[in-house]
Length: 305
Ligand SMILES: [Cu+2]
Image 1 (tube, helix red, strand yellow):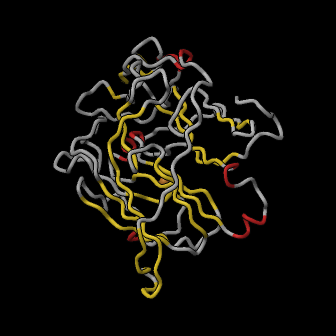
Image 2 (cartoon, helix red, strand yellow):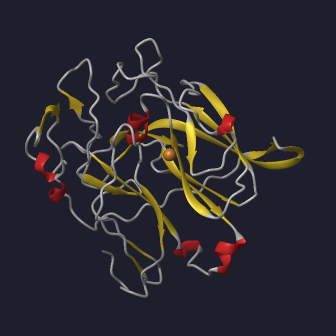
Image 3 (cartoon, helix red, strand yellow):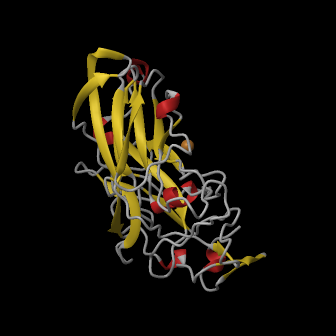
């Protein structure tokens, strides 16, 4: 619906009711100059009794949602973002099937949102706190009380502990905000990260692993010419919600401009812009595809496109 056409005009073709700040022209971004960032691995801060079996001690993680500034490309100014542990994507949580863990999700965000809330939407009414978060593990088989129900939100300076039994097959999942009425904004701001479950069956496939396995978090974002996140709004300031849009910039692990990475051995890792775009639709708040790529030394050694 919307891509480079907005690079030079503040209109969305065919959607005059949507206001768009002058957008960054994706063709103006230098390609292959930034290395591929790899999200940090989350580390447990201790152990706690397992809610399902108090005699068993299980890893306990604590992840703070914080505001931070980081640029999406070396030629762009640092952009205001929200992220787990002050990063987008947040730290990758890695575990094994049937190895339960606990996460304390901490809301350490400001009290004011920096993206446009529509208070007419159900669950985002004016009398409610602006900044509300609750974390859902997408694809996780999670008990109801830890599943991140949209109305189980917490506000700044609150936290909630979630229990993830991980009684499921190996998979790459993702965790993300799920708060009623504003989760499209919270995810757009950066509140998402990867969650990898491993098992023996996956290990038996002998796939590339260790430093040869890189999680990729791919999503579309709309950036303005200053390199700042920009969430388009309707022409009605009282009701800024729009049904959907597609950002003109693709991010891979929080960076744009076709990132590249070479290992010390000189093996190239391919990571180019995906041909499809993710949706930032409010009712379908996918932050993007979560995938893992193997190194490409077999098919295109020493290339980084
Ligand atoms: Cu989800």
